[in-house]
Image (cartoon, rainbow, N blue to C red; front, top):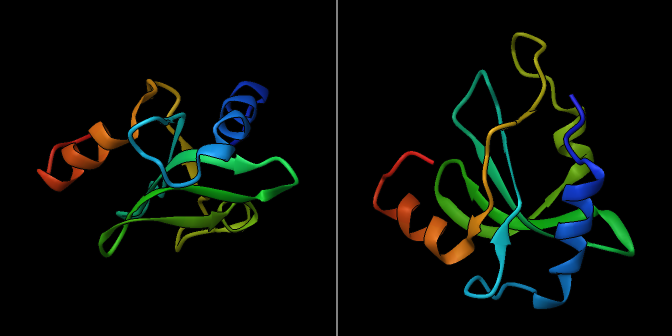
Length: 107
């Protein structure tokens, strides 16, 4: 599966200058491990280094930070299945998503 479409890339790179400002950014994509519990919510991408992604990660804890596109693309779980993109995910304000995750809501 293609994790980054042109539209997602454009939206993520457009928000890069906002850094970690969650109030003024949207989550533009959701990636998940279909055989595990980890989920990555993409806020922005460095236009000069497309491998550098920034967003919210829901794994062992809920965190804000960077993650690597190549790590997502190259990961193969115990069943040999890679990371997937939620095709039905609708962009949401990053702070709103963060608060929902902290309340334990399903996104």
